[in-house]
Length: 320
Image (cartoon, rainbow, N blue to C red; front, side, top):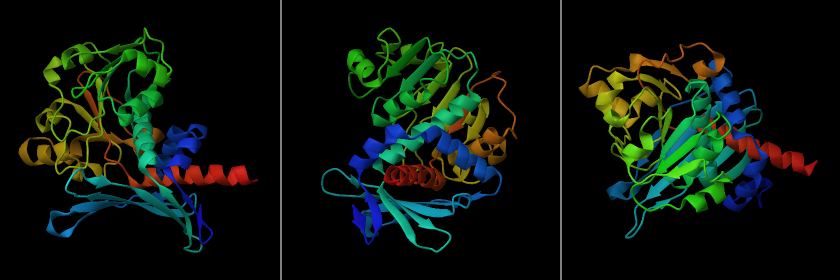
């Protein structure tokens, strides 16, 4: 669809296009641009609606290497039944200030979130990591599995979801996995014992596992949710881990467990050892795995701009 000559991309169209673009490399490129000053990442802005009717979060990003600026707007609208949650990204040109594309960002948000975690796993996980655990089984969790599947030689992938039963056969078929590779676990302890990488892919606003159940140092990744002060790990355990994040200038000031830890424990923002711009350019220290490693992704407007730009580039190439 076109609106005044501007393409308006629906969720159906993005679903068709996504398999044809390399989202993880798009994330790698834009974080490198952020490191070398070609990109700008303002803090996200949450706007509360009157009378507790919800909010909308604004994710901004500027990528001068592509001559783009953009914003994703994600409303959370309270209704008498379930809340309404949508997301749309608009790209504009820094050459003439004109809009370039309006894109339904629901699927794009899932993919860029998973790809960002995958980039962190690629940068931070031990080279010999072979056991992968996932808490959560929704669309975000499944996208995470897809994006990290080829990053290491996994011998076992374990998945646990506390809210519903799972079919290993259905998951293997959907994700194109050998049946012997995937194990559906009935409790958290079984899922995370002796693991190398633990990906938390839930919408929980409170901790989803007990760190004492981990039997050896591993990489823990977390995305959490937009609920106030949401955290998938206990804030108190940040002092026990080597902490990384997607962007140190914004994430530690908004991620629930980091804000609480800075307020209530000895952990502070300066304890962040590195972020993705530093990791992709090799300018921070890699973990030694003498203790657990924690990576927190909050979600950045630049990620939305990068994946939307990939969609737009693909469409332009198809028109040639």
